[in-house]
Length: 382
Length: 132
Image 1 (cartoon, rainbow over the protein chains, first blue to last red):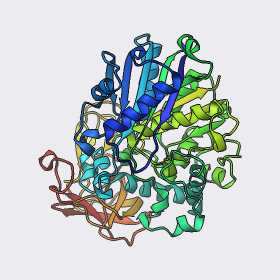
Image 2: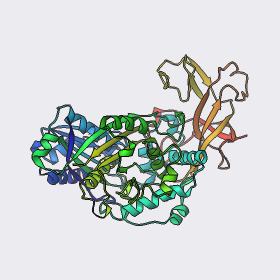
Image 3: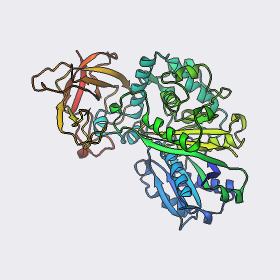
Image 4: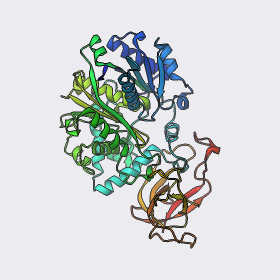
């Protein structure tokens, strides 16, 4: 069965007044409106979220949302794959339709984070770590610093190449009305910003963000009864890598990216050369390099050259993060993987406005933890 | 003790797991890394650290070559080779990839009461690394 996406929405990302229930309801309600699907048609509701209990003291958010949108008695489930919860939700939504368990599945991802200090939010996210990591004060940014230093050393890559990722994604974000930051930056500003995890600096990191995004899934047969404007999921998969980061053979390789994309490519019949546009999980600039290589877009140790050559710019042969990426759009954990696919839907349907590129096949890679769990989704246009 | 495990197929891992992450076998031996000399694979120095963590917090991935690494005491003689990595704090920011380091025991690596993790759920002692 071919699974399609017939509705897509996202809220403004940034510092929001609404709390988690309000953010999820805003995106979910807009998504139903975007496809003119009535609430009673929804049979499964999936809510992608990492830590509403830890951030806000609100648990059971799938039931809250089902009630707030008038979806009950629809089956409702929360999907947690930390930072990759959104992509995991896409995979679960695909399974719910492909299995025949649901005829219409609504996926809503969201996170409310900005009421916490940077130190507190960092600690909530660092709670994914193994006790031997947590006791040393390891954080996700510090894993990025460790990996970036090894990458630059191992492949003799210039430090400026990481700054170029930030500059590119900030430039793309200026054309995204939903983005948290709509401000261009220069390589000099990125290179001179304060050190956060040596050798990485402030502009190598995504911000702390509130926001939500939603997608509506059904079979192609059902899709056609509603609209001609839909995209197909060509292939989707997920995989894990070691929980303890230092136990990986090569710190510059993300096994979860390799494995999840291998299966997504197989399921779709596409290979890396067929992909026209990609949304990658640039929570840290170094992650855009690792995914670009482990998805098969460049040889190992050569992504930095692809960025320097402009391949990933909006007018390059493989535009990456036309949305602005997590870097400028923001990273409300559970929403990010859903918002990646939202951008692909806009691009494939020709609705991306000033960000529009020519694309028939799009790929989204959503990374949880520091590559602990990863999903890859490949979508194709009408 | 900086405890690693070895399985019947010779895979060595730190920290210990109930099953070998490489082959799924139950581990059969314990290896103590505390008296060995390791090599810096990579390092960072983090600011904006979480509650209860020193700032800046310098950290490194350290590799031990069990076939050749210097054994400071005689207790570890008879190890069967292989390499194993661990992670931990550094005693200094003056460090480079490839530097040789030794483990130094620290009773309390961060304030157990300050963070989100339940204080009684885990151990808070461990080893930082100092250059030799």
